Structures are given as structure tokens and as C-alpha cells.
Length: 194
Image 1 (cartoon, rainbow, N blue to C red):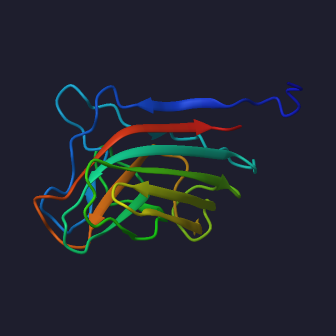
Image 2 (spheres, rainbow, N blue to C red):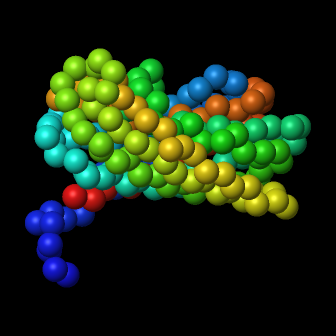
């Protein structure tokens, strides 16, 4: 390795220590896939100042795996990645909205997703283009007789304050509510690439 850039890849988060609590058991609203529970409050964080002012080319990559079950009636599943200034919340700024995948009759199915967040410049405050993050990603799933996949982005997030903590989150939304719908985030890895 040349160490040309003088920087290195760093794992910012690898977890959780136990599966996060299953989400969206009987709801068609967005629900957190990283919801803290007793004994399992570790959540991914990009600390304030992680995106460095005056520096371009910083990169964060992430990947995740979800255990998914869905009802036999027509169902789609949508995953969203975002950042929030408070832990254990999902009302912040959207990085990526993955395409709705048809997940009808999933039985202990698997979703695997990944993404990158490129920093095109950092500034203070939340005015437009204060900090310009460009995100893209992909998602693949299998759990019935069909394999589903889709690409997300590129999506620009230009109204985020890099000077404060930003908690990384994932949400799941099912097109229809059913007690047979369930999504459990089992693995999430977030890396600072340089």
C-alpha cells in the first residue's frame, strides 16, 4: 500500500451487538430499523466535525443486511437511509430512498444493501449547499421465487450542518399493514474511507 493520501479506511460502526428490534409488524408507516432497546443502544454516528471544512473527497461507505418476512398479499418494501442530529430518531435528513421492492410472500427473506456518501464540500449551518453530500447505493433481495434489486440515487443533500453530531439511520416502510410483515436489521457497517 502506498499510503499516497496519508489517510486510511476506518470502521466507524460495526454492529449491532444483538439484532435491532423487529420493525413494522403491523404498520404502513416508516419505522426505524436501528431503534435502540434495552441492552442494545449502540447506533452509528458521524461525529461533529467528521466532514472537514475546506476538504473535498471524503467518503463514507455503508452496508447492511435485513431479515425480512412479508404477507402473501401484494406488498412492497422501501428502505430509506438518513442522518439525524438526535440519537434513536428518524425525522432527519434523507440521504437515499431505495426503490420499492416487491416482497410479496417473503419467508425469512434477505435484503442486502450498500451505499456511499461523497462529501463535495463542508460548511456550517443548514442553508442550501452548506454541506453538499452526494449519496448513491443499491439493494438486492431474495425470499420467495424471485430475486429483486434496485439502484438508489445519486441524491444530493445540501442542507446539513457538519459541525454537529449526525446519527445514521435506516427505516423500512411496507406498502400495506399486516402482522405478517417484519423487518430486522441484523448487520450494519459504516466506514470512513479517507
